[in-house]
Length: 209
Image (cartoon, rainbow, N blue to C red; front, side, top):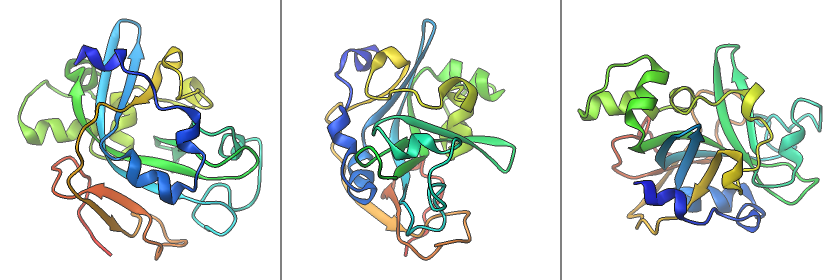
């Protein structure tokens, strides 16, 4: 899987439309993390779209602040926040500069770097499906597996491999995209803004609209 690092990253233009357009297109793409000599990669199998002022669940709903600056552009940058004071979550900014929007990464299918992911998660290495799911199935798990933190990664340019955190297209054929309500929120909970690969075992949950 080392050839993944040689693929060109998705460019800024990919992230400029509405998050609802980008989210399903991100499924099947590959998220890469390079830390030192370690390369970790996972296929994106589950995401959630977050909008601007009209989305009460979005961090941008109350307007631009120092904390959420990344959400207002430029597009293609990492927005990392601490959920409930416990776990980091990774998003990528969308929309043209000055307009807010983002996509939350909810689950990855591990492709390479299993040992580094397992070490970061404090787990024993195993090729069993159940064990592999524990690496990156869920937004907190994938951030732990890729060692993503707000202090280190918030604001990183995810359109550049030089940032150590980027996304590529390896021409994986997506069979079917499913849509559901978002998970774990109470505001704007009725919006069908969660997208995932139908039947993929690394999706964190399979609830539909």
